[in-house]
Length: 236
Image 1 (spheres, rainbow, N blue to C red):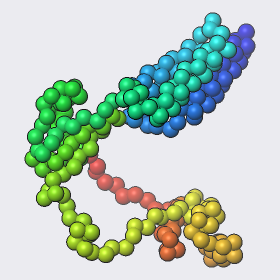
Image 2 (image 1 turned 180 degrees about the horizontal axis):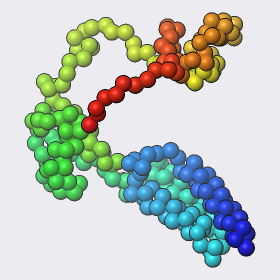
Image 3 (image 1 turned 120 degrees about the vertical axis):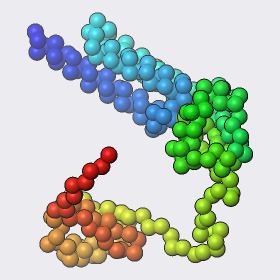
Image 4 (image 1 turned 90 degrees about the vertical axis):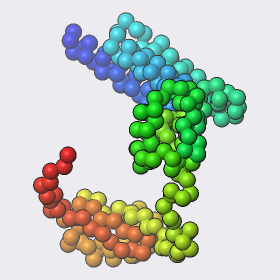
């Protein structure tokens, strides 16, 4: 009997998680902090339905799975509608709120965002702003993060402003991972099959001792070996 009950629970769990995974794939990829109030409510509802379907055998599994699909489908349709309708988008999403303009805190908007002055100052410090008079504009985004534009005289100089020519940033591509050669990465870097084989032959004796190796677009290699050990440091 216990084995039978366990089997039923495993089946219900696999079925619920499988449908839940498919529903979230359809809903699209977004971080928790970027969910709209409606998306958050839908996620909580879907999680509750899935949890109840797994734990409570009195709930018909088929009905629970259909409920998951229906709730997820409603969310997909509403989000699609919000992409097509600006009015609908405003109804189900928060609007950006200007909290600081030209160094002055907009008190009414601060209350609208339900933030205290202390909370605003903390958000500014997280953006490396310790002097509020240096802020040209601070906007609370719909996902809860603060975007800050500093005044021109308080912003660091860029090479463009100094009319300096600087080389482009290189994106390092992992070409060896835990001793395994990543052939697709080498192809993306412009290697031919013959060059890949030559590369493999050149590094055949050291491949197994390489934890990870990166290569830039100029084909310069940076190797991190397996035996590298960290030093003892007091980090607080």
